Length: 139
Picture (cartoon, rainbow, N blue to C red):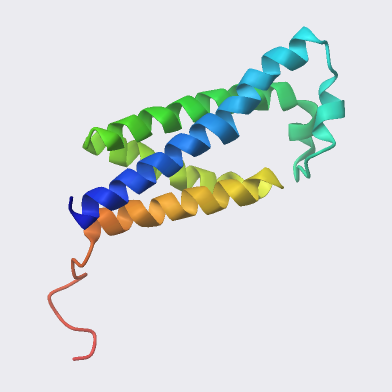
């Protein structure tokens, strides 16, 4: 097994866990909250949303979490099957998560750690020791 494949596999599993647990579970929990008629403002108190819009539309955010989790899982499967589209989708998911993590505290911290680690593994696996240019920086 090459080092590159090992790194891709680790990135895929990180993305799979993040998609299933951090983004899939809130989507599944949405059904329970709706079934028990729980007010979204009660649930929103556990988060420090920077934008008040998020507090007012928590259920819609949980639906979007399910969509994003499904995309992350599909990208992970593509990586595990050694497909370039899986690499691209996973890289896009990681970058988008890193940009948006500040809006989703405290869960954004774990999102940032998982996505940052996965993105680093993806880039190392793809580019490895490939030099930026043929010239040396020291010359």
